[in-house]
Amino acid sequence: MEELRTLLRESVVTSLAIGFALSAVIPLGIVPLTGFIKRGKRSINWHLEIKDRPDNYAFVVTRTIVMSGAATGVFLQIAAKSDHILWSLTDATPATLIKTFAGCFLLRDFFSYWSHRFFHSKLLYKRFHAEHHAISQTHDNYDGYYIDFYETAIAAFLAYLPAFLMHQVHVIAVIIFQVFAAFFVFSMNHCGRDVQIAFNWFGYAKKPLVLYASQYHDDHHVYRRGNYAELLPILDTIFGTEIVIKNRQPLPAQKLWKKAQKVRTALRVAAAFSSAGDQGRVNRPNFLQKAYDSIRRSSIIESIHLLCEEDDACHSQLERCKDKEKDKDSDMKVRKD
Image 1 (spheres, helix red, strand yellow):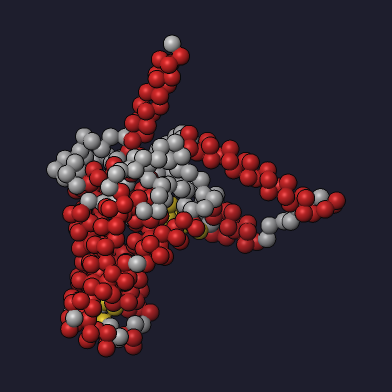
Image 2 (image 1 turned 60 degrees about the horizontal axis):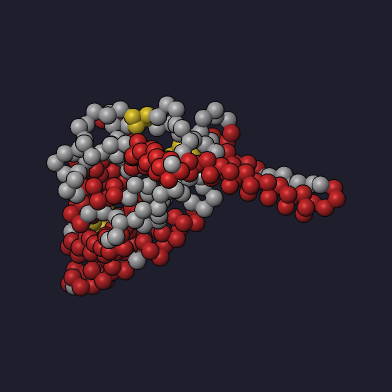
């Protein structure tokens, strides 16, 4: 690692080359993993009915990934010259790695909360952040990377800023955190499926402890205000921007998904009885399967409390979808007449 540090310190081209190589983790690792995890998960938005994509979608997504690689290269170049950033493998102790990861996690989400909230203000929303919300229903694995140029630059700066604000951080933990953040913030938060990570206390608690839920950020895209935090929902609770939905009505996409799940379940049951032979025996799920099912079925209730003055364009996407449905119905009536 020290030899690599010396090489990076002396060559900017090498730093950028390694940064671009690390950015390849997004299309080669993060995106395929997201697609695998969300398979079989329930839809949480309207994307089964509305699949709109901006004309410059591929260009903007590619630009964001390239800029993330450039930002990583710049970080490696500066980190190689910084004395407080550790590179030696002997310094990569569990305490140092955990401290670095936790510090980057907390500081990065705190900075991102306020920058995200500021991008929804009347001053910046239409000029910068409206491009990200041009996708009315996020569901593709690359939707999170559809971001404005300047917003991408600011996001990259804030992502690596915590590493320079803490004392004695290790470069390995910083890079691992960046991959972790890219996976959850840009991919899982915009996958359009009900993905949760929860701990059910081995079945002894009435309500499981939800550590992550993609529904939280999806609500932000539906209402276009509130739920500004990306990894720590408690920030929205503290600053009064959390979205609370007391009665969450099922969307058309969810109704179609529910029907598909019933057909899928019926086919599985028929296959189980068929494989059991004349006795009609069905294989009983083991302990691990029961634990997985309990985690998968766990849910969380998000909330809304709007205290910041967002741009007027940050209206409810749900109402916009309803208006589209009304327009379709009216067109059908006119055609019949």
